Amino acid sequence: MTTMQLRADIFENLNLLLDNEDAMIQLRKYLHILRKKVEQDIPCQYSIEELSQRAWQGVQDARLGMGQSNEDLMKEAETW
Image (cartoon, rainbow, N blue to C red; front, side, top):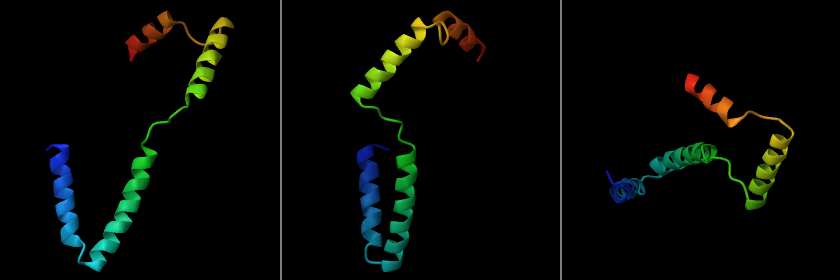
């Protein structure tokens, strides 16, 4: 089913429920729950400044010998 078909189906079902106050109340509650769940699933988002700071911190850590080499990481990943 395409996105357009999904939208059409959702709107069609909504139109059928809009005349029923009890159904609208239940739908509203469910939509609030669904929205919170979807918002929690959104991956963390960083600004350009935050990304730059994190990258610079990674470079500094690598210079200090902290972290794991790419070769060691690849060997570890092969065991996964």
